[in-house]
Image (cartoon, rainbow, N blue to C red; front, side):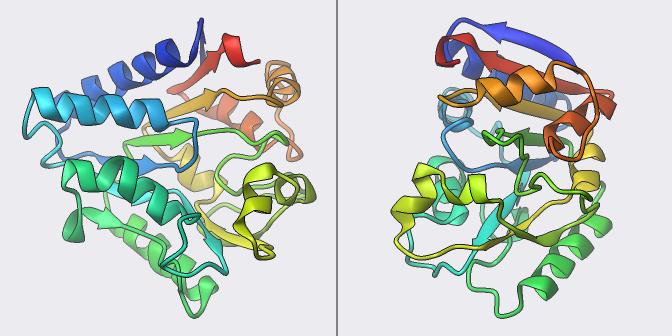
Length: 236
């Protein structure tokens, strides 16, 4: 894993954008795995700026959504879907046949995860996987546990995740999410993990011990041959 220390959020986002733009330039039809949340927001803003200065730059790029909460409806502004649509997809004009997404209101979340896994199996694989990190060290919704899941699955949310400020604002009790598994992430050709925000330092300190442990899912990225850990020093 390549470790990058950045002085602030803008520098962190710019480095991430440089890596993404370079890869898209060489592989225009790549599959981009998009995470929701604040960590990649700056990256998405720079991708939108790139599209404005170089129209058509992302016209062949395909996108898959990293995860989604179970129990929300399509009108909720707290879904991963809403977040990614507003920040990235609508502004880049990505829809329909260029977008793979966990359905927010899936009647059977387990079958929905199987459907997404089938889509991934039929593809050439994820080229770039964007990640943030939870304060408990989770990546996507792969939570600390005795065992971790390989492929797309329904995850039970960890108490630390449930206690996060964002989930408390949702207004309903969330207990599960649909998510990419650890193998899906590790099979990606490039992984970019942003570490930014209050409360992330303990997870970062454990990650930097370079030990693989199931109670710190992010630590499995040490096994990846092309993972970038980009740290916003100002925030931690």
